[in-house]
Image (tube, rainbow, N blue to C red; front, side):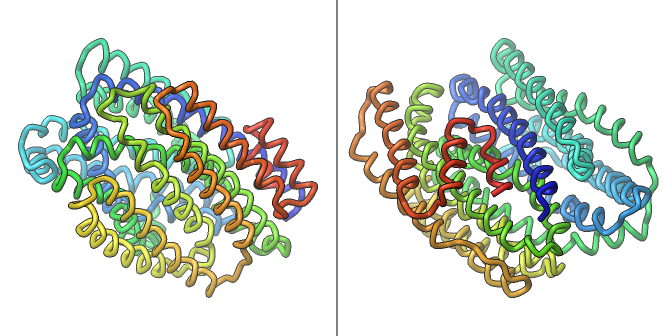
Length: 493
């Protein structure tokens, strides 16, 4: 990997990181409102509605989003690349339209299927409209990434979230519309932002549709439907089991704790994956790719473990400040969710061999097997343990999926990973977190002081261990002083 490529990747990843961080800061500001204005049951309803549309998106999307990168980079000419974007956008929009129309018509049946009653049929109608306009965002956002336009990507995302935040505050707090207000704000935001993105994409690539190309992309993406559905089962099925065995209140509490797992993913993984996953296809032919990949993997893991430990330590104080007392138990599941998402990151970073070889069936089989294990664990663990059983089932299932993915990816395209260093950092974080459990206090200021001490201790321990060279220690210091440069340092190695 040439130094110019590293620099370019680092700059783009840093810009994506800024957008992702601002994205999460703005959206996270809504949680104190949701957790004070909405009840735990209302929050559970909102979670189940959103999740159900995610299930539909898996079937309707037919793996087309994943197919974009595969086919876009197969062509060199701008005309051919534009045809890929135009074709998949037209195809996906049509599929979303028919699916949303069907959901809108069958609102009562779907309400009964999800909640066991007809009370939420109007909510289903609203979420179906939101679902349709998601198509206006999905492919255009991918297009912005493929043309490497991170600034535009960030500006649009920040505007989208600020608009939605403002509408949420007005409709949920001042108009007191509750869940309906959240859905209204989502719909209005998607119409406004989606309208601009459709115009931008049409102006850039035109509106040409290739049936032959559409067929090839569908054939590539079809096996991923099973894999994506199994991904959903792994990530979200525990909420349905919680609703059945424990009720909507437990779903709401658990969902709040689980959101911090998404914070870890968006804060660290999403900016890196946005640029690293497509670019590694281009760089795989470079002789230095093997060493670069090894360094990227280690530094990403260090960042993940550092942030995961910090979130786990401060989650209790965070929930006590921002939410009503009925939500405070959510902090109990955060450490398990953090660990699960570290394993999730391993899967995303170690699956290159599967995608590079085009043998996506391995992903489908591995994720399918893990999804079955997830359902079994949910049946066994959730009835006696509630949300703690859900978190444990998630962790165990993620581990099984990673092990399967790692084996077949390495068989297709072998890459070295520095597991010894990663294990040392992970063990250090375990011991630090375990020590923090002995310093429990009801005073938030004292708790914050304790947690700052523990996170500092973790950094000192890692700095003292023989896992960093002198140059890497300088990188570590710079990362502590300037967090926004951390992802640049990860890619740059």
